[in-house]
Image (cartoon, rainbow, N blue to C red):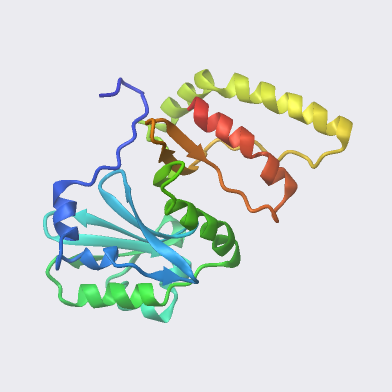
Length: 244
């Protein structure tokens, strides 16, 4: 139970969604082990009883139950432009959203062509070099069972509204984070360090894990070959996430 304006974290799939994931059910093929660009494709549950199929840092497919007898699928425009996507995102029924950034389609639960369309789409998916670098590390961490076990990736809390989130975060951590940034900025000027990147206000935790004692573990993954400011900004990201 959460109070008015309080954040929430809910990943539990509904019973209706679990039925669609059962053996021989319409979404059962999403659970099959597969890779793209050498990285394991992982299934993640999201709020609103939505499923995300992710390859490293990239969400390649979203699925959710729509009404009583339909399934809605969605992907980014880049993936929808591949030849193998036309079977799942049919030219005659596909729709676009978010200014054309995403492409979606709605299928009947009993449509026999759906499973084959999903297979064809996933077989042809590839991801970019950056996603393959950091994403490969994330995928490997997901299989670790010691010293902790990862149970969610790209995690974030949900808020009733943007103003509610801004109000809570302003009260919760901004003074502490800004004080730490000011100290590091001053130190960087004296020692000629790389400049800090701009503060980020909408953060996702790369991975959430739990250790044998039941402690929550927050993981932030960085590509060491990337910009120096991105790498040493990681403690600030974790600081914000811990406060939140």
